[in-house]
Image (cartoon, rainbow, N blue to C red):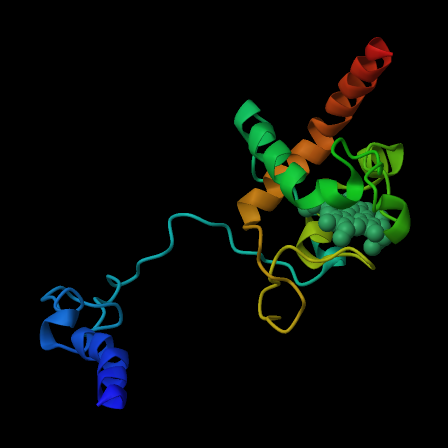
Amino acid sequence: MKIKLFLGLIFFPTLVFAWPWSIDMVNQPSIKPQEGVMTPFPNRSIPVAGIPTKVNNREEAKPLTNPIPVSDASLHTGRTLFKIYCAACHGLTGKADSPVSPKIGAISLVDSYVQETLTEGWVFGTITFGSYVMPAYGKPRGREDLRGSNDLSVEERWNVVNYVKHGLLKDSQAETTRTAAAQ
Ligand code: HEC
């Protein structure tokens, strides 16, 4: 007797969940994802947002010109992305002063090497394809096998380039002044 009661208590909640009305909310007349035939794109439609990556490696990216003009909005986006994606290794203002910078050999991005010698295209290519130690942030066209995880869209990468080339140095100098004033 006791055992029946025990089993009943164990199985009763399970049975209740299995009643037909338990899944009423799931079985709605609405169209489920992947259900039916997807509406085809109109003939000759092209994506309106997004610039395709047209290059296959950093060398090819070197002469590219930045399609996104330097503006407050672009610098703002670039700065935000920089802090999320680049600061961990290159430091918040690019001076290679994050705790991991010396461990992995991340270079300062405010030195003349990056600010003057490297072209904007090369910086874009570095973000897209990665460098020796540095990871890639764009999935190169046709090379899905590469380690890039497509974290940054083409536009986002150019915004970061704008920030690295036209905002980072100023921010880093402002930070140095602030720190000096605080001492
Ligand atoms: C995981 C750490 C790491 C992250 C994150 C990282 N970098 Fe780097 N980066 C490095 C290291 C290490 C080097 C130097 C060695 C090398 O070239 O791989 C480098 C080199 C560079 C160079 C110089 C390339 C050259 O040709 O000498 C640039 C420019 C650069 N990084 C920009 C960026 C930008 C912009 C971001 C963010 C989108 C970023 N990095 C994110 C580690 C990182």
